[in-house]
Length: 482
Image (cartoon, rainbow, N blue to C red):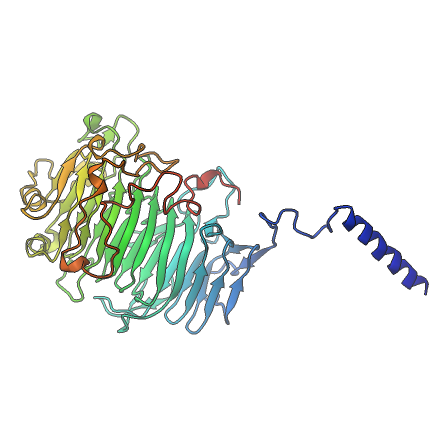
């Protein structure tokens, strides 16, 4: 009886406190910023840590990604909107979705899913953790193969409509590790991912290798941001043939890779062999901005713009090794070289351009030191073929009916500074030449794309405060407290 009376008094006291506006200790102090718990995902090993059955990472919890974490065949990993996953530096945390496994990461504009570094704000660096590797059963031109980066997993198959799940409203920050040459984990790596996979509204920031790399596959995507990456923004290999619309690349002038940093790097495969399926990916409405803010001050020999630009930047588009990639209605700006179309390794890449299998149409090259080059320009800090007159690429770009143009950045009339890193300055003004003139008549873009009228990633009707990056992108991840 005495125990019952004590419990009654306690319940009465709690009721009084609540009626006075107090909250229990474990109740959320702010519904807009709920406080969750922190859990480990993975045991820190790089061998066989598997998620054995369907799992959900729940908001508002935070998860420490430790070591290589595999989502194997038949298992689905669901990540709720707003969840934060921190990649562990010491164990090079990496998430691998294997063939037959799925990721269901459907964030929202207001609550994106964030993969970021576990390091404290102010001390994060490219390569703090591994990244996301998504593997499928779609075709590639090298057959079944093990993905780069030291993981166990294979990719490749015969199902172009294979479904690896969903990546939507997702940020990936400070990932990407180069273990050795051509053995890297990128911000996001796609290995033979199929067209059944949903990919949209993704930002990869400060990757220690490529921001995005596709090894074969048929996956389509929209609304991609590559921000301040180390190596290439968009790298396509091994017969990737997806369609990508609305993409932004923005480079930090002080961060370049030893192997030459490009906006796009595209190969049919590493050997440059004429092997089906070809890399025939089609990109449209891309705005690609390199590091060169002052072309007149740029030193070709040293590769430096004063002391502010890393010498290892190379080209906006480096198309080589028999690729048949195409890009339409896009802007390639502020790189040392605008476009390279190269016949390296005995390939016939330039012939593919002549035959319109490789296609650059309705594009602007702006603010480059050399708009065009026939072969590789920079390698480390050494100039390759500095006297190349780029006759082929120049003639191809300016071909009749190509609809291409060269310009200065000023002539494109952006509403702000398109090279700024802290806010979005790449919206074209209403009187910009980018505000109209897009073309969708070519067979490569006749289906699967929104038929917008503008060139580049953004409509002139958008604003710096209200565009498709608003609300979910982060242009200062270094100083964000997670």
